[in-house]
Length: 546
Image (cartoon, rainbow, N blue to C red):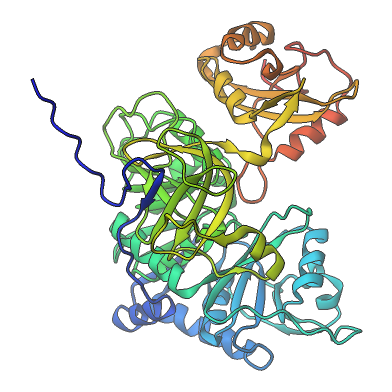
């Protein structure tokens, strides 16, 4: 009996962990919105509670804001948006693009120190927000009130001239927007995303979801989170309506699905920590939602067979324009109990798994994920940081002259699908053994009593290395307080002894940051602030489960 040879996977090089997405298609960004404003002027463009703006109304509002900014803002200038989800945020985003400037979404509460650092490093030409929350250079500069619904008291604040006359940092030519990412120094880095890369992403997203007139797309993820520009522009560039999520639904799974129903949301994006409890609940049978994009963290579970929407597990850093790979899970199908993979590259993307020297590895070997292709960002607004992370492509790679080093540890299966394993820089040494916290989390989550686990490291109390702390969220099926010692006993066969957490704390829920990601620093801070407790398995946070 002869076996049928395996069919080649398009874009996959045999043997090597290197794959190309199909050719990408460029797409306009602002021009698409303007076109819909002419073609469907009365169609709903923005829905925010009782407020509904048609495409023509939103277009005029954006023109009004642009006119108020144009006196002091020039093409290529950075404009920081310190606004929450609102008509004002959307109008300001459109206005900045209309001027040819580059918007930097910061959100309504970016933090005093963070905002001051941004103002000192980047010296944006203008910050838009509540004047009381702006850093000194902009708080003391010239203000111009902006009349836009949803954000009363908002001003455009133009920085007072610096003492040394230092000019504002300008975005590179061709930039669509900039977003902040965490830097190794503790200060944020600003990455500039190009118009071509962003337009291609939006074209792919529209084709993937079928987004178009008559659809309603959520505006929900944190304003400073890099999927936010995709949410906003995908809807307005497709003739769909952008629906602003109320604050109350952004952290409550039951309220969220209820809002999807009443608002008629058909396409949405969720950060992973909010998506998982939504998927844990019985799926309402009458939701209009057709497509749900999930990203921002490792997805621990696949959708159940009762989920009626197509679910996309997306992966991608801001430095590669939001999405690089995607794994799509069709509705009404059993996708298994394990963590879904992060999938294959989207059009225009090139992915490769490399060793520490940047050489592509064979299929099945874990290494660092590097990304190339048309989706790469222009770079950081810091030449040194750009040179450190955006490096020359290996000789084996065609179609790109540079790749971005993600710092993520992955492996590529023989079918070209990528599996996410964790962060290289999250690895810690415990008792001389290098430990991957994501591996410990996955071992804990094998237990049916655990919905989610988060493992963090801190200096060992006795010195001489690190100590692992595990925070576990019990499943509803657990029904009673989690027995920490029993849980650690169950996890030991999966881990070396050094990887077994020294402290295990049950929690009812995990703290989230402004972008909807689990705030590990807040977990450690709460642990340090709590009264001294026992070690393995016998500690319990005030208000924790059980």
